[in-house]
Image (tube, rainbow, N blue to C red; front, side, top):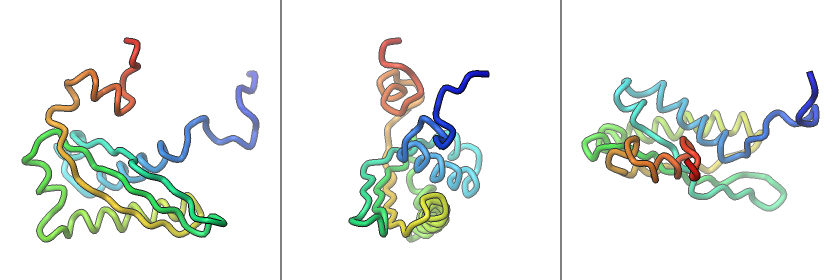
Length: 128
């Protein structure tokens, strides 16, 4: 078939998308089904340092109920720290550089049933 992108281009998606996917994958592997399917990841900041020595990433893990937030964080923040460490390792492998990753957990009540949230998180087009 015809080529739609240059051969060297792996995807038409940017770094934010792949960052979210790496973090989301780590969430899926570390939490039970209810939490995994109720979470969304939102990159707040993605900054490469001078000379691309490292990348500083800030992201939010969005949950749909306030009762899920303490589950994601875990006792003393241990579960969130574990997820952040594993996600950072995946991102360093993918980006081929050192990554400083900050993850916060935020609640967006019932985000999966709100059109504006579905648009914001990329699940629905704004003109639908």
